[in-house]
Length: 122
Image (cartoon, rainbow, N blue to C red; front, side):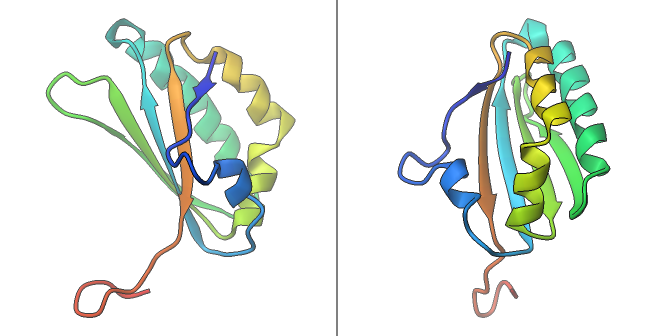
């Protein structure tokens, strides 16, 4: 079962889902016991297949921490918060939470690109 832990204790991902901005990036950190890594990967791939079909989905990439770590990072791009929210509340997607290993903790949070003069463009 997928357990949630907020990345930011002052603003929940559910509060973020009430914003009207886009495009947005979902950053979702997963932690899992090392022996449950394969089950996490199967569950994540099934979720990604569902999300890929949703309106507003642009792309996703899963990263694994190096050095034998069992921490993973999902980076997913969406056209808008509204698109992500609709996809997140999709019953087919929600039903997949039970496929995750028992030790899985997910920390999803939404971000928007920002400009930093001389370094980043918005």
